[in-house]
Figure (spheres, rainbow, N blue to C red):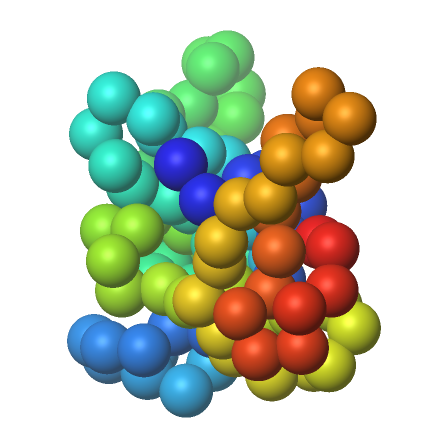
Amino acid sequence: MKIKKGDQVLIISGKDKGRKGKVIDVLKDENRIAVDAINMRKKHVKAKKSGDKGQVISKPAPLAISNAQLVCPKCGQPSRIGYKTEAGKKFRVCKKCSSEI
């Protein structure tokens, strides 16, 4: 997977197209990511104690990883990602500016 937790991504399709956000969770098995304040869903939460009230909370739902593109921290542009190996270490590389991510 080329996108990791903590990366800045640009949403390239769907209702949130054009918005940027930080990846907060990666679901590797399902090829999905959860992005902060993107693809928000409402969840009804039951009261825990008898005196408390139930509430409706908003939480980001996972979206397909193909709907997001990594934003390079160096050049600040959305770009594809490649891999490079030097001295036995593998790291991600921006395809636009060729800098290490």
